[in-house]
Length: 183
Length: 191
Image 1 (tube, each protein chain N blue to C red):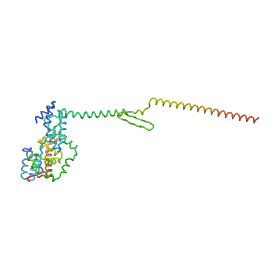
Image 2: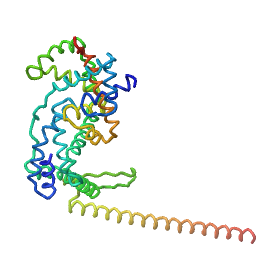
Image 3: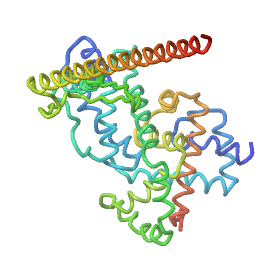
Image 4: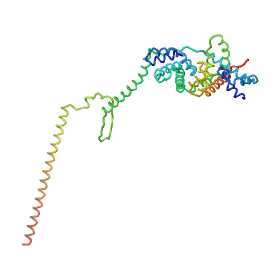
């Protein structure tokens, strides 16, 4: 075996897990004659000693367990939190849809929503008496316009009759004049 | 680990107190495994909590209570891997690169002192950085073998790879640590 192959068996010496493997005798023989491999083995042993200087420490804190139930409750907390988040989203969606306001007028289409119905201002609405006044005014306006329209129509009809009468009179007079000329 | 096996069986039968025993018995090992994988105490503490939460959730799927330890280590390593992905991926490497060679060489002098007393913070820092610069697989193999004392078969089982692969990762991981320590100015050999 060459040096690289020999070194693959070093852990058997370092950790004494090789037992009496067939390679052990060959490795030992190689180590007697190869100073480089001998030094490598010594350095690996020294490396282990350095590593062993890092002793075990006590944990900073004890693991928090007031009985395994504490661990279990931590596990279920996440599950409940997830369900609560989903429920909150559903409620928000419902409120948003319930308070949706869609408007379509001359200015175009508009959409608005809010989670909670806001306090409506009294100024946004007409009182009963104001509605009565507006309706009365609208009715008066429409009656006035109807009367005005009727008057205009009668006027027009009278004008037409008067015009026809003059036309007929002029025709009669022209016939009379024609007959006198013949005579 | 007969006690652990027994505790797992008792917990699976519904004895909740057995889980407390499992946690108290294993939390120190899991904390130190996570600490050596991540190099950060707060992260390691979080990993301990997350690991036992996962254990509690999925222990019912453990078919063989005798293999609880390897199963537990595998869960811990999965959490460590996820944590490393979450964190800024280059954090440890940046620490390592930004560390001036001269500083690291100065810290070398602290290591012999650590043999007499406890290890100093600087010593831990050098070892932490030497481990942090390894690839994930090599670091895992070195940590499981050096600090948890797993056999090669257990190592292969935890890492879910063939035995030959586990051996190779361990060897190359150890050589990687050696190379990194040298790079930080630590001298090996008889000098």
